[in-house]
Image 1 (cartoon, rainbow, N blue to C red):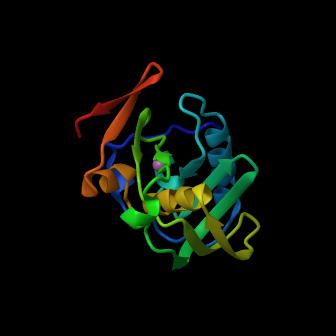
Image 2 (spheres, protein in one colour; image 1 turned 180 degrees about the vertical axis):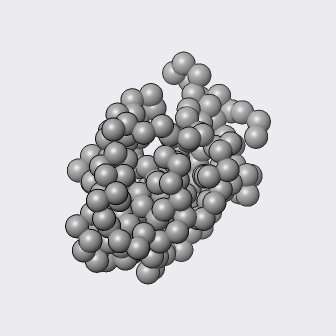
Image 3 (tube, protein in one colour; image 1 turned 90 degrees about the horizontal axis):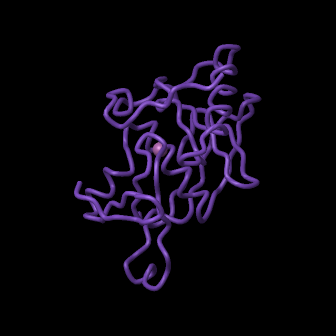
Length: 175
Ligand code: CO
């Protein structure tokens, strides 16, 4: 079932999500629906979806990016790399970040390039996994959702520009 993705004005996106006590039939159905919902997004395409985005304040997110497909339940950050210093990122391209709950808006964020998390997968198995590069950015974006944080919060805090895609062009917009 394709679920409705709520937008950034919905207060559900600002609540902290709670731990999933048991991966039962209901949770399995929610995970399957989140995977179908993520796969169905085409404008814009999605690479990650967190449960609050479909109206459920539960610690679950799914990722689908090239070969990387993950179901993450109850993630805990074990290790987080240092945020890039201005020096380290000089000359390097920061990755544009967007969100299905704020469609067509993008901004450059400096997030740590490595993260290690502990979580339960869809089979209720405990996994410890490290992500680096773009996948690390996706994981941090999704964990933020579970804490009620949106990428625009970082954009505002870091006084970074926000862009909107208009046709095929990026236009800077006022926040
Ligand atoms: Co998002």
